[in-house]
Image 1: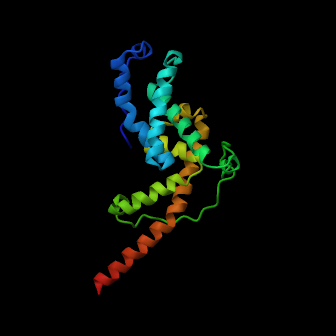
Image 2 (image 1 turned 90 degrees about the vertical axis):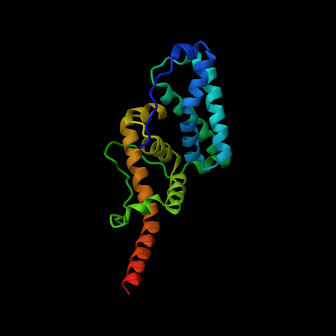
Image 3 (image 1 turned 30 degrees about the vertical axis):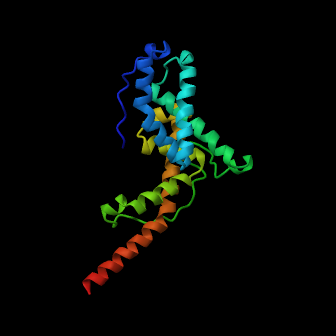
Length: 209
């Protein structure tokens, strides 16, 4: 989990247009906003555009920001909206209706998954470039509604409450979408890790010979 920065910015100074406070906000959150955009878009140029637009819109909206959420949560909300608009410009509107779920409390509509147990994989397998690239592709293949929750909660380390605030969802919806995102990722990665387990077993037999 990524450690979140201490919220030490002065909202009063930001709203007054203090150049030092504005610079501090950009420096403090640029890496995090870019990382979220990149995870959602899987495109460096588009992520840079989202980063730029996020701070432009934030600075324009500062006079109306009441501080009901943290500055970080507010910036994440702007960034996510910008990223979603970018995604929707890529494809016809009909294509946006993809694998959406009823966010009911009891988890109805959950897919019936056959999931492989990865317990026997060596820990270093999860740190290889190939595994990371595969995971990134799997994240980018998630439906938008699941991807945003997963990125904010599991990648950026926001709490359930903060994620709900950033996405304007209930905490129940966040928990439901997060569970579904994790299950879909696990399902998609099963084949990759299954092949890796077979390779490891084959290597072990070869070494034993």
